[in-house]
Length: 124
Length: 124
Image 1 (spheres, each protein chain N blue to C red):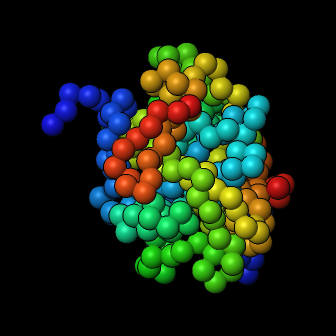
Image 2: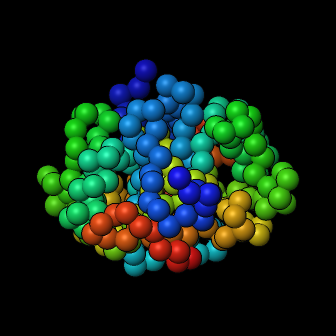
């Protein structure tokens, strides 16, 4: 064991949750824009590291998912980053086509109207 | 009930997980850079909407947490966004000081060395 705290270690030790998943945020290598948030299990992270293409764990389908496998909207991974506590992943990607399954560039295409917080406004 | 799918509705209906939490990603309003990933429960999201300052749920301390309450590194919320499935939140923020508790601007200051995936390289 090392005395180096998790924030300062050079050892990659991703902290998967009790469900075996870690959240992964994809950002665009071109301009840093937030594209999507998905989840990885250990196999998805390993495949991403090995192949340089983003793989996730689909919680809805319950399966390993190579991003763009059916749509062609693949993500070539430029950098894999982790955060201070190593309980989140950032993928800096070259995104082919839109990242979102709705054919929008980013999944975050709606703004919460304040101060009510009841309605959404579409704005990409 | 409405027939409008979750991706196209204007009704904000955030999907908290079984643990009552939703992941929230903060990005810098100035340049779009990814700053941090944390979690919100319903109270944290409501406080964020009401006050215009980022609030999170601290999983380690088990308490509602106004970002910057002790450090002064507050986040003024410019936009609150949600994603296609409404199971993630994006906060576009004006960040006072560094976002990370390690005094780095972003929490994602380490890159995973490939193809081994064992080591981290510090690079902000």
